[in-house]
Image (cartoon, rainbow, N blue to C red):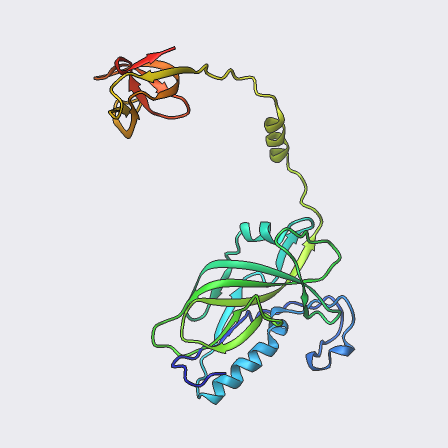
Length: 277
């Protein structure tokens, strides 16, 4: 721990209790006595980091404690989901008593030991699926802003560490990490809406595509011609002399007369400047 930093911070995870799956009181110092298939609360998962942070705080005479809290202290997911999908779903129910949680950086998921603590050697890849009946712990990594001129101990996620959640002196307001248990439910049932969407997606396309023609711009080489939107406004794009473009339909546009529509674009070129075949 460097002592030449000007700013200290304590960022601790949610002090929300979750009853362990196994019966009885869990004693972290004597983890060998804990039964298998144990799910620890966020408070228990973060215990060692609380202690580390408080020790540094006492050393520097700073008792400020920031708590990241999650309304639902468990990350609920469906079997078959991946860390990438879970991150896309966004996690918005995390807040802090001081400062502000601004956005989610990443979701990092690990299998646990029998005592419920994360096994940092089993990090799931972004595309790995979660399975029901397996115990997992997630590190939620957030952007986090703190008030100016505040002193904290900074607990953050470090992907390259053996133990990726670390407490450190820091003078910035970049990220904060929260450890939460993961509950894996059965695979998400397919809804009627999603089934209907899938059927629509698989249905063969019957709509007839507009036939394309080739339009040769007959102005001098190096000259350019403005194109317009369907409402007659300049599209801020051009076609160039002695170039050939695909067009699909012809339309009369006020102030510009008949114009040819460029294929796949809302751009029309006046017919007087092109030769179509």
